[in-house]
Every structure is written in C-alpha cells, then in structure tokens.
Length: 101
Image 1: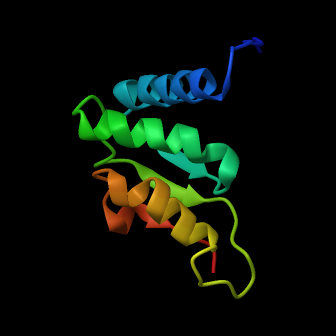
Image 2: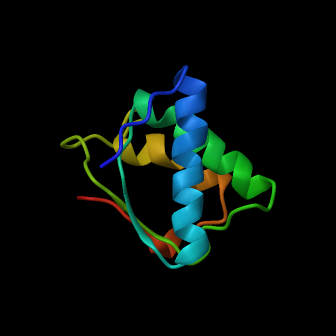
C-alpha cells in the first residue's frame, strides 16, 4: 500500500475520483461497494461531474450500499444520501443499485 498526502479535501476528492475512474475505464462493469455520509460528498460530487462531462459512465456498474440505518427511509437514510449525492447525478441504472433492507 502507498500513502499519499494531499493538500486538502478537494484534492483528496479529485484524486479518489480519478482512481475510481481508472477502475471503471479498465472494467466498465465493475462492482462498487459505497458508503454514505459527509466524508464521501466530495468524491461523489467529482464522480458526478465527470459523468456529466462525458468522461465517465456508470451504465454497466453495479453498486451495493454497504450500510443502512435500521428502519430509516427518510432523507437521512443511506439510500437517500447515495441517491442525492451520486446516483441521481449519473447514468447508473436503477436496476444495478442494491441496498440492504
């Protein structure tokens, strides 16, 4: 493993998005396990930007949410956070998104 030190959160988000982009360019049907929360917001924003710019596609990607709050279907649920921060802003197919129940 290699440690990378970056200057700030924005640089971290861009670097992380580039790594995901590299994976998807090599394997367009990759399976991603994603978390929700404040720390992932910059990453998901950059991935959304790349998709809107036509530099990245999620059409064949399968996405699994790694967690969900018990009995939470409100705006703070992990599902809603992922939908609002990434899924609704990309070309991912709804049938390729999986959430714990």
